[in-house]
Structure formats: structure tokens, C-alpha cells
Length: 204
Image (cartoon, rainbow, N blue to C red; front, top):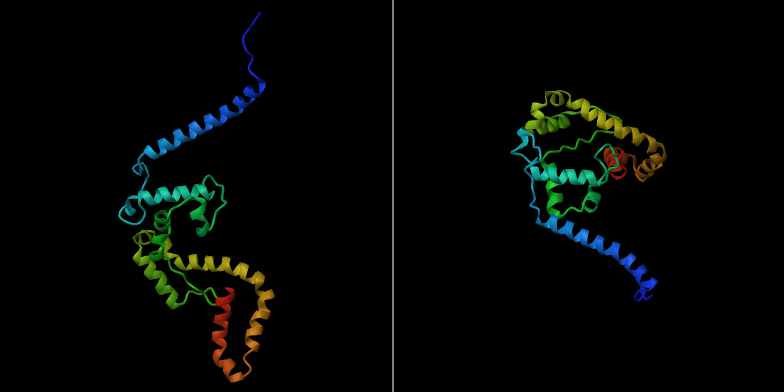
């Protein structure tokens, strides 16, 4: 009984390999077409009412959520990534990157404490108060405005905890800088500058 030509096993093997690949390509192209056709919707993003007219827009929240997801910050993952890495990890373009980090330049204050001192001096106090006055969101948060010194002190304590760990090993670096001041008079005049130079170089 003649049942017709038999299909060679090699053909069946090639078909079994090609079929999944073809299906995957078709699915990917279909998904890409739907993504390209979908409008950039921002209407469903929740925005706090008191920041509607400020930098916290729906577009910013969309970018922020995408970055947080890519950096593993959602659902308690807590992985995190540096700002310089976020652009690559979250596949951000220049506009997204500027939208995310640009507003911070006018909304941050960096207070540098003296070594082994957590006291907020007059200059630092004025800088913090000015930052609070310039930010309506912080003005409405009386608990933050009334306790800003504690917030800065906690930040310093965290920094100081890690600084002390390396202070002993790095003490010779400070001594090496000071030892270069052969003249005692010059040393006394430049002692403050040496300390500031050490802090600027080694960060502690």
C-alpha cells in the first residue's frame, strides 16, 4: 500500500526549531506595533493637588515610576541605583533625565558641618529657613519646618558614623599635609585652610 512520500526527519526537525522562533518574532512585532500606536497617556497618574502647578507633574510621575521599577525600588525590593546609572538602567532619554533631576537644583540645600560638630550655625540655619520659605510644600509641613535642625543632625550623624570608621587609618594623611608646613608662623596662619583642604579631599 502506497501512502505517499515520507517527510525526511531533518525537515521535521527544522520545522520544530523554526516554528517557536517565528511565533516569538510575530508576537514581539505585534507588541511593538501596539506600543507605538498607543498614545502617551498621563491622565491616569495621580497628582497631589498642591503640586499641580509645580514640578511634580503627571509626566514626571510617569518617569519616576519607570525609574523606580528599573532600579528595583518598588514592592520593597530596595536594590537602588546611582543617578548616573538610572539613565541607562531605565532607558531614559535626555528629556526624561532632565525632567527627573532638573527640578532638584532649585529645591535642595547642602549644609556642610564642621568636623565633629553637629551644631547648625547661623549661616546654615538661614540657608535651611530660606529653603523652607521658598518651598510651599515644606511650609505646610509644620513638623518638618519646626524640626529641621534634627533632620540635618540625623543626616550628619549617619555621615559621621562612616567617617569615624576610616578616620584612624587616614590620620596619617592629615599629618602628612601638616608636616609640610615647616614654618610655625605659616602653619598657624594656614591651619584652618589645611583642615578645610583635608575635608575637601577626603570628605571627613
